[in-house]
View 1 (cartoon, rainbow, N blue to C red):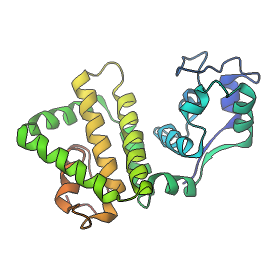
View 2: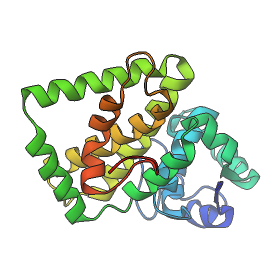
View 3: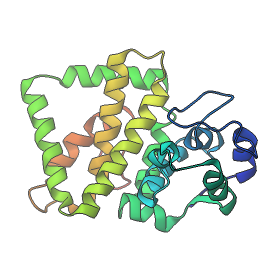
Amino acid sequence: MSIKIDADQLLTLLGNNGEGWVQGTWGNDTAMCLHGAIRRCQPQPGDAFLIEQVARLRGWGTDWNDNSNTDWTQVRDLIVSGIEATDADLADTFGPQWEHIVALVRRVAVLTTDEINRLAAARAAARDAAGDAAWVAAGAAARVAARDAAGAAAGAAAWDAAWEAAGVAAGVAARDAARAAARDAAGAAAWALAVRDLIGQDGFTQQHYDLLTKLWRTVIGPVHPDDAA
């Protein structure tokens, strides 16, 4: 399942001498940062958001691209050496549910306008003081369940990848409320999935997991193959 980005495609976009490489912005179709180019070369939708989280952990994330100490020679050397997120990289980044998180982020990346609007409608229908409080409590329980720095990092990485994928899928045409709902649904489902193996520990319950994944499961489908309908 490792994700590999074609070096020749990246160099075609960024230029052998870095003439298409920029810092401090995602850029456009003629000049872009490294991760902007990766988004255009990803093997399938969603892969770039997963690689961004691996890259952050490994030290060559978006902040590295934008660092004033990073120059084109370093970026080109990284590209030539091979940009790849191996199974081990993905496991280190997203934890024991990494395969299911990969599948979830890829699904988030291809959300349709209809699905995004349905997520927004479901979120609006569920919103009231009690529902919002329960949502916050479930999220807090999921974070407590992570227990250690590695677990918290995996949950945060899963959230970030899914949240960003949902925002890009929604695009500029989606209403702000619909985009926010899609991001909330995807991010919450991803975080819950990252700690799914910890249900029953440290106060994180099946009810918490079900609440965090409910929007996604109701509109799109199961987050994990063993989830009940």
